[in-house]
Image 1 (cartoon, one colour):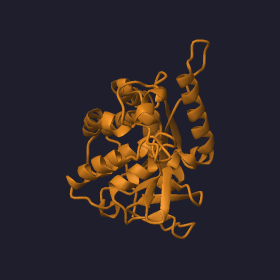
Image 2: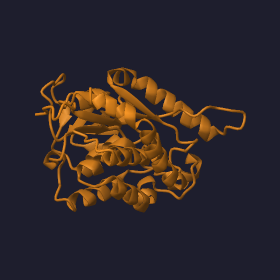
Image 3: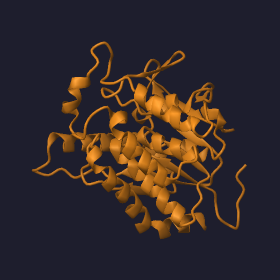
Length: 291
C-alpha cells in the first residue's frame, strides 16, 4: 500500500494528548506542509486525536486552528480560566465526571458531515489511528479507517463508529469528562495507556514515524498547583508512552510555557509554539525522510 516515491520514505506522525496545548499540533502540520513534507498516516490521542481527526477529514492546518478557536469554549465547557477548580459549577452530580462530552461529539460529527463523512471507516485520505481505553475491562481499543495486517488482539480495532464519537471517546479526560458509552464499551481518554500512538501509526505501513509530545514544564518556587498538576500529567504521559517513543524515528518535543490543561487564552501561543518548534527542527525531519 505504501511504496517509496523518489527515494523518500513514507512518513507517519503521532500526536500526543495535552489539553488545549493540542492546538500546537496544527502548527506542526502547517510547518510540515510548508516544507513539502507529506504525511501518509496519522495517529492521535485525546486532543491529538481531535487534530488528527480534522486533518484526515480534509481540513487544512489553518482551518483546524480557526475551528479550535471557534469551538474551544464549547469543547471544554467553560470560560477562559485555566484552573480546573473554576469549572466545578458545571459538575454533573448524576454522572462520574464534569461533562458528558456530548458537545465534542456533536461538533465533530457536524464538521465530518460537511465533508460527507458519517463513520470513521469512510475516511479515505490517509489511515488514522485513535486510541481509547475501555474502563470496564482496562483494554486499549483503536478507532481506525484501516485495520492493519499486523493485528495482535482480536476485536481491538473499531471502524463502525462516527468520527465524533471516536474523538469524544479518546478525549474523555478523567474527572473532566464522563466516560463515553459505545455499544458494550465505556471509554475514557486514550492517554491512560497510550498517549503517543507511534506503534499503531507504524503498523499502517509507513517506514518512519515522528512523535510529537509536550515538554514537562520545570517547577520553581513560584509555580502554582496548576503548574504542578500539568507537570505531573506530562511526566505520567511520557512514562506511559516510553515504549511508543522508543519506536519513533524522531521525537519533536514542544514547550508551551506553562499552559494549563484548559487554558483557552493561550490557543494562539500554542499554535505558534508548534509551528516554531517544527521549523526549528525541519532539517532533521527532512534528513529522516530522505534517508
